[in-house]
Image (cartoon, rainbow, N blue to C red; front, side, top):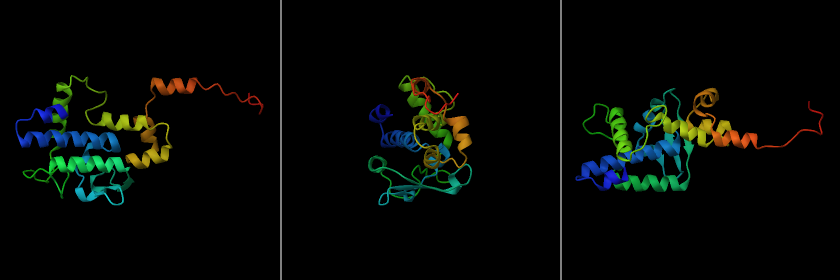
Length: 187
């Protein structure tokens, strides 16, 4: 996306690639669905408190979330904001859209173009959901309730059954544990 942005022959194209890179950044850092990311407003990003507010109307299950994020996240958000040249309203605003946001299909198309340009293989799952799954898998070692709260799952069973899949590195870590319970008479 950075290469596509640098090769752009117009400000409109440059901003488009900055936006799609920003959407991918948000997907990778927050674990949120594209639907929630798409509906994010600049006022939902509280730079002072370092919290992201995810609105109930933008959540698949209708829940609102307040998620604290680290300083480097907000520094990156500011850099994207400067690059895009936006100050208020929808983060992914589309002035000609009936609802004011970029259509989700454009996100899909732009990500597909970027992946092909980078000669990346298509990820398992779907375009955007693969990043949500990746986010959840990378956090398997953290407390389940905290991962669910940060990523937007009220029901941890969905997180466990669908998102946190086993991987070779984690399975090896489990089989590498040699601790034995001999002292307690466990059979």
